[in-house]
Image 1 (spheres, one colour):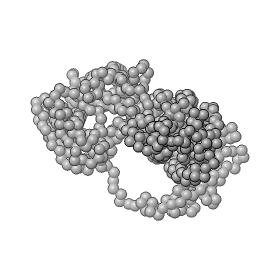
Image 2: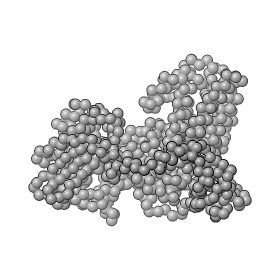
Image 3: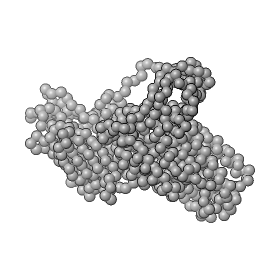
Image 4: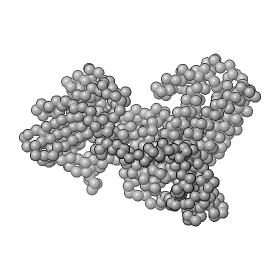
Length: 628
């Protein structure tokens, strides 16, 4: 809950005796009380470390001094010209109001939830916000998903699809944030609100073909005014919208996530300008109803609605205030309901002049939920090594510009050769960004000694492969800073990596970094096996029509080679089948040929094992995903 004075400043000196707590109007006993006050005066040193995996993200989110903000850029419900207007206030807010310790993310309606990674790289988010461009009522398809319906359905149906996509994405990101920590999280929703039905003047038979002569109402600005059928259609569609919004409220409240709505239209007298040929009555009604949806999202999730005002900066500042000091209250319900229904919570502060905001209530468990939660004998999770290997492929979908692969091999004079490879990632549907053109690598020891500094431009890439660079390093820890650049001079993004460089000359059994290639057809596979050498693939996302080629080296002391085996595992780490490994010719690696046609979609692992007499066996796991 948040307590502020009349000026909106947080009140941080209350004690448990200052509060009264009620559930369904019945008093409850406060059993847990804690003030969370974010310290923004000091910047911890750990904020300089990059967030590269789900584990990194969860560890960073556990720190209550790291406030969490996700900027939801709802391009489906923001006009192009108003998106230009909102860019600067948002960018100023991120640059000047947020602390370096704050975790922020950005998403569009079509951004997959696993593509949203919280980051402390605020510059990367600023780059995305700077390119934000709205598409409200613009039905030109930007990707295959939109192509499949904008030329098939009327504008009214497409608008409903867009609304459902946007609200579903809001629910999804609320669930993700709830999984990170219990404390307060904030979604900053940039949107002009959600409509029930389009005015008759905009109901084109084909959404992507406006003004094609199939909508005679376009010429009548008063079409739909004082029309009983229109009122009934708005009422019926409004019931659907209310339920969709209610689902968002529920998801946000279950996950302690507040939605702050930002309407970029500013002060307006109507939702449409004169070029739309829509009466002022219909235009004002549309403006009011869309603003009401934004107010509802904010008020029902303990957020604030920044609507109907030209100065967005003051409203945005209040978001930071709300997240900088709040109270966590805990109690055990005297009713302990298991009816699956919503139960209202009210919190009062005895001190006068205080403004109190808290979640409105909770949904109780059902009896079936309780039985599931208390059931014993649940199956154990996968082994830690399997979980770690699967986590390694998650960042591939979370980075916005490139995917990378780092391999090691024998070097000279006891050193190890490090090979770095990068490939450009396709843009997420609905997002706008510059294409990556080069990556600068800075490799240093923990003491700060530079081991390698160089650049890998896209022009270095072999045909169909990524750009690579190689350098030698002494065994031990290595820190790598990757700077991604585009066609201009600015930096698109940056990443920090920690690498443990192995000592391949040590008298131990070891498996070198596996290299993976994939072929779409027989001709490509023949080229991989008999043609000139090409760099391996960085991706670990494949299709069922692909055929994988895996090569790897082993290192064993003495003259007796290691015994090598391979198995296919499911994502729980359970063996599915043994795989055939082709022994190497002199000076060549082991080879594994794996067609994917017989596999279902999902996540899998290759387990490579090497064993030499008198030495403990070693294994290496390679995780990959089959998408279709």
